Length: 484
Ligand code: 4AD
Ligand code: MG
Image 1 (tube, helix red, strand yellow):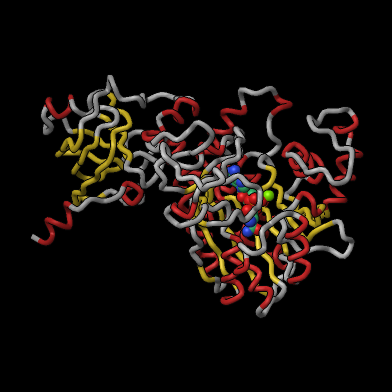
Image 2: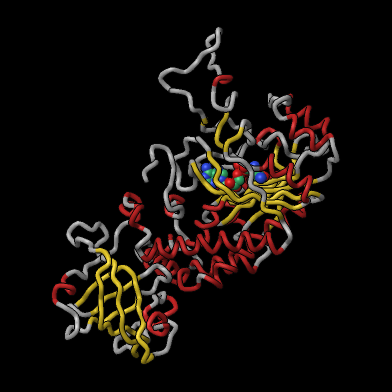
């Protein structure tokens, strides 16, 4: 009895493909990718990108069952694992029993066994996870998330859950989604005609968080080293390949860290998680690498990348990131031929202008040819909480710029001096009374501290070599896009 259960329990295909041929029967379950010659099933169960070849023994399997083995159908197959006759795999399963678990009408199934465009697949995001490309992307995404937790756990960081609903706009950019349970057809107003938030659910105006940083700082003042890893929301109307309205962010915050310590940690984290994916998602990355090489073949020689995906990832893990100040970067950009020949859409003329993605990518891809950490940005283009430098013009900010991505990390050493912070908040019209709790950390036991935010999807974009951020999150949210 016991051995029967053992034989019949399902084995995942990833494991099956690593087994030697054997007498013992085993059962696999998955979805049919293709069915050829009324005999050969390519079966995938999501545990790996590789399909298991299941050979239907048509002496033993009923004609009516064979007819129902169609692309997309869920089946269970039981049989012996034998050495494969065909090429491309070392073992295959000769199925003596096949059970149809869920039929799939081949005429109506949107995923045909052919190459679909990423644009088309985005429209059927509820099914695209069943393709090789998205299977690889989301398994890599999983391992990146896991390795991030592992990295911080191994270093003794506390994972702090910061709130999703808040009453503050941490970045002060005003790009928040409002949270309310008002009847939108009948919003209570005060005598002076303003929205009466006193009658709203929380008794005040609230929004979805744009960053967990401010609460993270409270945690750092108690535990020393904390991080948050959660969804953040921005109502910025950026219809680009690098922006989402809902994205995940990793935000560590460390007491007794200055900006250099902060940059060291960010660099170590990025190199660790990229190495982790290279080691644990070898097949998926190799698949995406080949996919990209095929795509590149369509391009003229001079537009092809110098490095393939795997080389690019290894390049980042094996080389120190270049560290420069904003001022140095501006001078490089200003003097570049690109600027002189007016090849930038936004020309660099003056110190103080914010860098656009085209400038960031120029620095990384053309000038330094490696990831760059830029520090000490002008205070007027950065948030109120960044530590002010003695020059009165710059703050202890850092952005990490990556090839093909531009900004992947934004962070800073924080202003720990109460008076300086209050003055800056006044200058920037940040209401100090509402942020009394934040200022309390400066009143009671303040200390040097720093932190950063790593955009998770930008990281996944880099590691997978995908080009549109909407293709690395299962269900993307962007302007006019909120399906599923
Ligand atoms: O530079 P940002 O706005 O920094 C902060 O939110 C700080 N509070 C972080 C901190 O110091 N704790 O955002 C951090 C990172 C960016 O570098 C980028 O990678 C990503 O978050 N990001 C986005 N990713 C996808 N879509 C968007 N709309 C993004 N906005 C920022
Ligand atoms: Mg930023």
